[in-house]
Image (cartoon, rainbow, N blue to C red; front, top):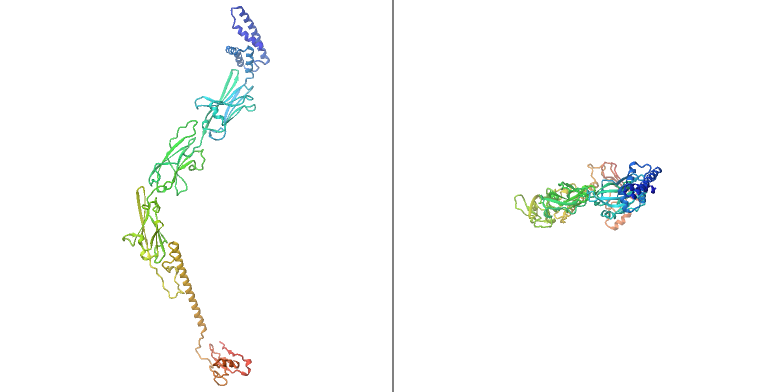
Length: 621
């Protein structure tokens, strides 16, 4: 095979070197003969399916092969290498053995449009295929730098299976990816070169290229496929708390204040929103502010700083409110826009003048009784600073005045008997109520700020009347009502509301006890009277029948010692007569309601054992 090729080559070379010199002519004829033999050998190789011309090769492929074998550029190239012709043919035969078609694909996993920086791993995959022998020379992953320039720098290099493996490039791009990426070289089971970036940075955004270099019949050829990567980044918390156009501590009702907030709104760009939190309301209210012009988008830039301003007029309802600025962007976590990345001011102190006061009476009544314990009058008012504050009492305070009626001159309320100030001057206490304390009480509230002083006042009428009681002749049946019984002056005077209540309760208890005692006495008297009435015997209006006694032995029965009616004059006679006591039977008449005996029957003294006591027969009614 080699000799045949050498003959062909020499024949063609000899044809081009013929000269008038006979020697060269002879060499030319010899070369032509060898060339003829070479062509015959090549033809024979083609018939046998061997050599550079193989069965199934297209005509154009054969022509390209022979043009490379016999063109002058090939001849001069190999001559520079000082290679013999037979080695030239062997090299060409090796290079173009089993040349086949090649395909190339490239993709990215995940394939989503934007990849959030700092997120999960991203793989750049480059896959090639061929129909015959793997003539791969090199696979590269590259990145365009700068973006849009069309110039690519190599990140990593890959070899065909069972080759030298994969490695990072020593270029700037290779060094940027080396410490946070891994490489996977193609294998016999997977002809895929993989660049795995573990941590995506904002600078990774751009255009990536898979470059495939292989050998073909025409020489070294390349193919490439491009994959783009766009990055996204969440916004950040504002750099500082919102600033105010007016110094804190000098803001008053009606001031228009401008607030300023600066923050990175992320990529894609979000926006800054404003919120107001009032102390009296649990939720936030949004303050609409003009949106600033967004900055221009720059490739490979993920941080976009935006400054927003908002102007609002503050009222007294905004006292202790907080103004918040937040960054609203989809990548920022948070359930509601106001609770996403935010910063807020401290509670804003808004000064405002005092309003008209209100006087609260305790206990509350239209009129009060002389002798009641206590009455408190409290002045309630809104204002900042409040008149009740302990700061700068020369300006922020309450003042109480008194006058007995409209048109009278006012005096200090504390000049009235038993009237004192409590609760920092906000309340006056009237104790041991008397008629002289009745009248008009005036509360004056005052506050001041920023070299201004404001005053408002109001008044209340206090009526104190004498106690009226009802006198009854029968306490047992008509006791005085506890509600109408006046409390003794000073009862339970503890100096506060609890002492006042205790005195009233004690007075009520005493009255109830007195009423109970009177009722008991009345009941006892009534019972005794009924008992005395039951013990008396009413004499009948008519005389009883037989209203005379028939006696035996008409003697003085009271003076006779043997008489049962004899009254002994001394103890001796009592003892003596005790043994000889005789009994008599009394028989009463049968007249209704009669209690007079009809007859005194004689007692048989000889039979005393049978008459040991007197028998009185009561009339039947």
